[in-house]
Amino acid sequence: MKILFAFFIVALALSSCEKLIFEPDLGSKNPLTNFDYLWNELDRKYSYFELKNIDWDAIKNTYRSRLSDSSSEEELFSVLASMLNELKDDHTSLVSPFNISRYDIALQNPDNSYFRTIQKHYIPDVWVTESGLAHGFLDGNNIGYILYNSFLINFTDQEMDFILNRYKNTNGIILDLRGNVGGTITNVPRLLARFIETKTLAAYTITRNGKNRNEFGAKQPFYLTPYKGLRYKKPIVVLTDRGSYSATTFFALATKALPHFILLGDTTGGGGGLPNGGQLPNGWTYRFSVSQLLDVNGNNYAEAGVPPKINVAFDWSDLTKDEILDRAILELQ
Image (cartoon, rainbow, N blue to C red; front, side):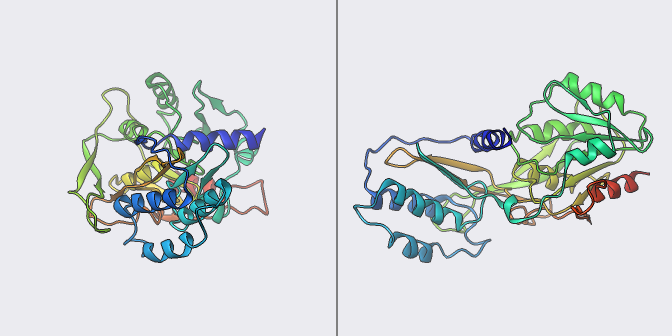
């Protein structure tokens, strides 16, 4: 069941955080034609060649030589998937009728959360909203805890009103985004709007727009606007790890502009660039990052991940404790 659920989440994630642009099916199944098409698409549009110091021409020479006009579909998929994985970018994927390939940065790092530990040793009485937000009291009702495990969750205003009313008398709230692989980007400003009092410049985005690999359009500002209804004004500690990806990296970067937010845990997994995609001549679909995310000072570290203010790791040798959560509680006492 857990394997099926994980596959379902990956499939949803592949359809989120972007709007795929499908081009006409050109009909060719020739392996070299499809290889060249995909390589050229990335060459013209991928946003992180220079920042990641990727030699895209050398990668072409390496992988194209593994194919011929008579290569099978399985061989073509394997070569294209391996080429895309050289980018080490979770927003890069390939989908065929028989397989899906996606680089998963979370697998390169240890897990930093175990919800059973939280439920058994910290919050035995966990409340869950209709959409799936889990929350409860910590530290003798002095601290609120909210687990938001996917930005695919479209929480309602009523749900958020209930949660914030429940914790209105606390010293602060811990927002747990560990393992949140992202989802719907519009949920980032929707959630942050509940915790700010003034319109705030939080980030910039730039999009690849030229044939040269370092050509980008003008910076586009990303503003946060306060919610017009109920808001929470006290400190917020945000828990992140390498499994916090895509929209979660966007969220983490935006909090850098908010002084009452503290990032705690591990560096996020990256994925600050928004993805886009299309269709190969043989009908397979693909996507990759076409933009970059910058902080308010123009720094570009979102693809490498947003570092926390306080680094803490989960110790798997003792599952009665959550060291990251303990440190967050200490910050709000």
